[in-house]
Amino acid sequence: MTFGERLWAAMDRRGALCVGIDPHPSLLHDWGLDDDVAGLDRFAMSVVDALAGEVAVLKPQSAFFERHGSRGVAVLERTVAAARAAGALVLMDAKRGDIGSTVQAYADAYLDPASPLCADAVTAAPYLGFGSLSPLVDTALAHGNGVFVLALTSNPEGGEVQRAVGADGRTVAGTVLDHVRAVNARTPGWGSVGCVVGATIDPVDEDLDVGGPLLAPGLGAQGADPADLRRLFGNALTSVLPAVSRSVLAAGPDPAALRRAAESTLDAAVRGAGEGPSGRDQG
Ligand SMILES: O=c1ccn([C@@H]2O[C@H](COP(=O)(O)O)[C@@H](O)[C@H]2O)c(=O)[nH]1
Image (cartoon, rainbow, N blue to C red; front, side, top):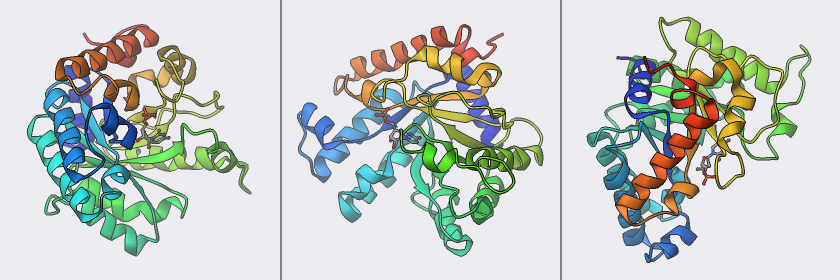
């Protein structure tokens, strides 16, 4: 199956929610853990144990593992493997981007099943030109995996780059959306290449239907609420995968409390969308 098919099925079965694994030092402290590799390991595995059997997608934030050095990356490897074994799709939030020859190495790391860091999908930055991401896209499609490309990020600074208008009159974000739509049009069904479109952003005059998933971070800690999903995504709502980290993780470490926080976030997103999870037809 393609990543698009696997993600669609997971969102139908488990609901449209992606929970981030972001072991912030402050969260480790709140969970009674030390800000070291042992604390990181306990935190990440607790999230996996509580949620990998429940939510459609878990999204480890690579930076919070990398800050612990090679042993932190080893925890990341174990986290990805455990989450996938327990039934969640894993989106590696690494936001990689470089010249194409180097992007191939990122593709080998995150999307080739031979790698210990292989996830189901990875986030990517297109600011060296969308074509520079081709090795990532090609490797993903070859292995039934996916890529989420930054288009309109949830942070307030993103607009200065993403809403800038090029010589062709298109915004940078619009160009990214166009490229992703074109890639997905090459394959049948729901595409395996998605875009990141923050739930916090001001409405844009862009076609957000890229024929694949839209990862929407920004609910909770960054200030967006479920009603923003409907306001922002309109007809593209069926493709939206809301992503939350801190507002769910703050409920831990009790596994039942983590599950309740994820469930109530999903319920609120469904209500905000007006019908099935993020507006998806559950019939
Ligand atoms: O535009 C973007 C892209 C990625 N993120 C990442 O999502 C989570 C959000 O965490 P919260 O605690 O729910 O705010 C985090 O890992 C970001 O790096 C994003 O926020 N916006």
